[in-house]
Length: 76
Image (cartoon, rainbow, N blue to C red; front, side):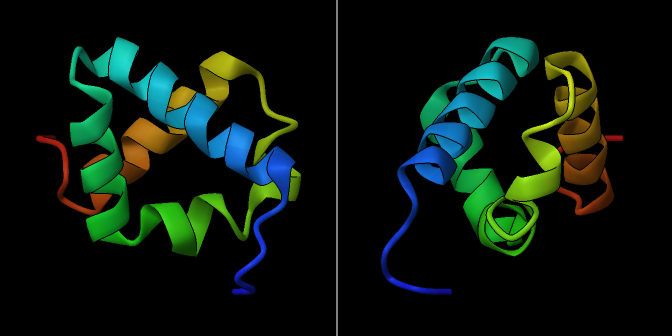
């Protein structure tokens, strides 16, 4: 991953964290921490930005929530 992060990707990461925070009733800091520690943030969201940002908000959050459960950062 390059050190320069595209502004659109950064905004998308922020959007994902914010929406997950609302959906899961967790703080944004907690969501960020879980996404980062599990690798979802930099191994899934960032590299898959081109595809993920085309998803509807609802589908995106369902996809990320399912993946968080799969990775064990959310209860099943």
